Length: 381
Image (cartoon, rainbow, N blue to C red; front, side):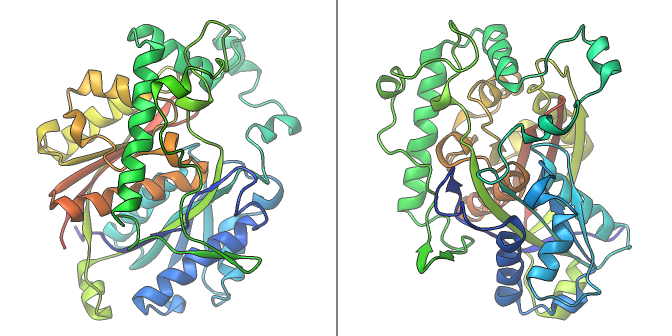
């Protein structure tokens, strides 16, 4: 079987809600990272077999196959196709998995995988205004329970006995790690500035330096009056886009490109859709088994910080080294632009693996409906 390698990965800075990227259309934001890949690698866009693009709320600006709109907005040849993928928060991680699978199967030679979400312009939950998500049979199966990720996070905190102080301490760690990474220039190699109205946007906007248990204690619970989940220990509503170029080692050599990492293994798993956010635990076990690796073999873990209980429950169940978990911060600190987050996590994973020389890295994300992707990559360069 052929291999699949990542030869470059880029992302925009993550904009906060109503922030620097609020006026940028999703297709244009996507086009920005598509063209950044071309400029950095010298690849002729005419040779790209497909653009596989994650996007969650596919209405309004993000409707009508935003992947195809992105290709056209980028000025790429009309024969280059695009497909938009929705696996909830893991959409662009799925786009990376699907691109790698297509390359390994020999159906594609050169693919761009990534995603976008402009949550300022398409608010979270906007899809609920146009119909009935889930459908009557699903709702009946779960006794009419209204699926809600915030309530799922509360249930996880209750099940694992996580106190608010513990969750808030984790949130503070996320901000501290992100601040240290920004100050050290860890993101500089893959971050593509965006110019908006004459101002160049270069840094993730959501970071709040000095966040602590004490500062977060002032916030009111968001989902239950006596709950532990609030805006400060949950991911931020954000805007952003990211893209990776995936090919084979042989094709990379022909193009004069140096692979950064090899796609090693991938898995997807389902879990209870009411708790909803525990999927990364079985997905991690599944991908490690498929890869024939142990948790100790992995040098860096990126577990999406949808809510603080998610990585903490994952940590408790996997026994992973806490120091290897989200060392550059995460969505609590810098945001979670849904359809882009999987690809953004992959840029972070690559950055930390290259920084530390870690051979293997594992990325996993909880997803609406109770599914989760898990992906292992192997450092090459």
